[in-house]
Length: 194
Image (tube, rainbow, N blue to C red):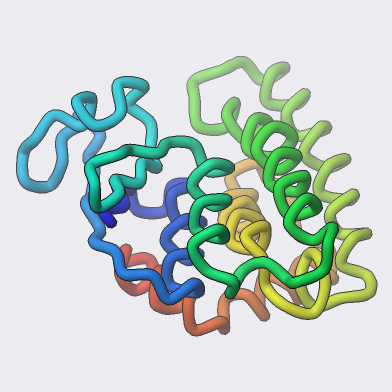
């Protein structure tokens, strides 16, 4: 499989998940001009132009974190617990983070107004507090082991400083624990982010 990525972008979640799942992959870096590291036009892989994209061995391309992370979990039991609701809770968490966290980070990456950034910051504070509450009883977002939701949360928390929001104690502890996971350390090193 080929994972098309940009260092430090949300594709980091998929990169971590592939490592944690023990699935073979090849990284293909995308630059700001939407070119692959070997000079190809990335828009031929993903016409939307966003990362991540996961190209399967048969040439099929999956895009969007939710779909890619679900596919990785489907291919490996390493990131889904066996109980009946965990897979659905993981998808629920990724969907929430994709819209409520990722979506509200966008104003800080673009040249938008102070008012738009303030609205984004207010929403982020509210949503990050909700996630902080979820971590009250477990070391990972959904329990005692990593699921596909955790790599995405790690990326979101890693991206949060751009908004000026400080992590609360539980989230800081979670972020520190995740940073020490071998799969996270390897992904950060492979993307030259360590």
